[in-house]
Image (cartoon, rainbow, N blue to C red; front, side, top):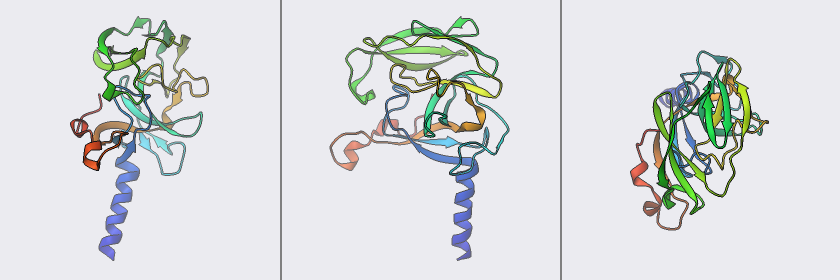
Length: 219
């Protein structure tokens, strides 16, 4: 019994302070993360976030631009996954679908059409782009029929982050005034890698697994 109790306490300690699993639900991070991906989240870099609470009880760090994080949304108290575009002191401007950070437009180049396997709902007008943030590239997507949501310049308060989904036309993020810049105390952790991925399709258990995504780092 002591062995079982010790193992349970160790598992609880790991879940609270070190790592946690998170399921991706929805298209907001396509093509970087897909609906049905399961990711491992590192909780220790930013603070101590207890289960069933909305904010960390203590913070000792914050993410850097480009990190993909799990945070507790101020809008609906749901856990969401987004990419950090700006941190405290940054000025963010969105115009004609282009992101400017501190007066510099993030370099963006078109890659090609979105793959059907990378979309929850297949849209033939969807295109994939490479966006570069602090010299590190990541992929985003836009749909041709959607107009970009412009936003006036906002200075991110200290101890906050400005976050966007990689699928810029299908993401509830900091562009929503109910979310806005999110305090670091609501950040639950940084995504590390995909440990499992399931297609939302018919077929056997083995046929539904996206084998090529297992073990992939989140970039």
